[in-house]
Image 1 (cartoon, rainbow, N blue to C red):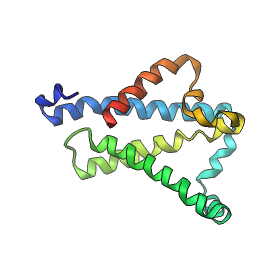
Image 2 (image 1 turned 180 degrees about the vertical axis):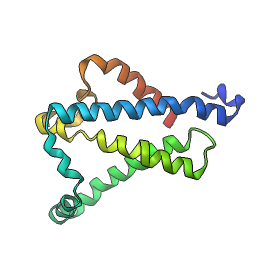
Image 3 (image 1 turned 45 degrees about the vertical axis):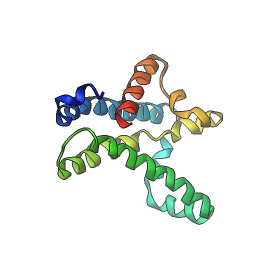
Image 4 (image 1 turned 60 degrees about the horizontal axis):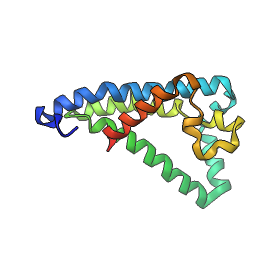
Length: 147
């Protein structure tokens, strides 16, 4: 990656942007696949009433889990922000139109409802077998870009 920086960070950013878009498309697609295959009732989790009940019930543990959610969202937003010299408006649009919807769709709750024992390795176990290796490669590229 550092070899290509001599061409300018804007060109590196424009090169990485399609990879990040593929990554977000794949995680959203896998989320939709698991939603349809395993349990469609998890769509209720988007209802704010459930998060209020969750915080009332689990108090401190709810705040701890919220920290992981915030890190996930800010980390993926940082992936888009780091792909080059984009305007604030373009990063906001990418966050609301690409990143956030992909994260919502990538929710693995449907998979976990049927496979509760796979909680330690949910992401890779939730991937359909036919696209496991392409997804693995995309995850590696996304991790390299994010770093």
